[in-house]
Image 1 (tube, rainbow, N blue to C red):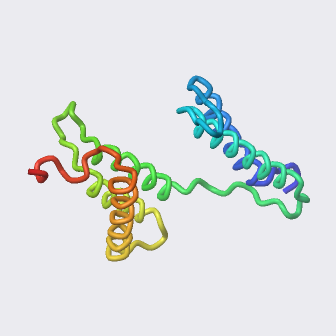
Image 2 (cartoon, rainbow, N blue to C red):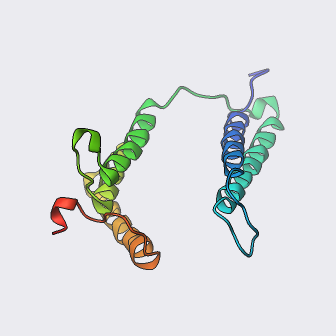
Length: 162
């Protein structure tokens, strides 16, 4: 393992890169102050925090002794596929695909879709557990986003809304 960097060095560097990109992208919006936050304040602060966290993780990994370092293992293709597919499915179910005539299925159906598909990324998959989790998430998200925050988006499929 001599000369090999710890996997935390690479993970921290990736977090720092993503955080820096978000912070840099947020500079095109008005940040405002802590008392009067503008649209760029939250993404800027979140990006900076993510970049700092990434740097801390990378530095801790770099300070490990060579015999303590863990190398990067093989790619976990199954979890990668199902997590990405779940997020893409969420977007398609929430907004539809107008170019091919697929209607928006709404927030509730999108939550069930992403939960079931992302659940397949694990070592064991239980449809029953995924549906229970999706139900809890659907209720929680409905309460938080629709009732409390009053966000305006399709909650149910358009053809079932009446």
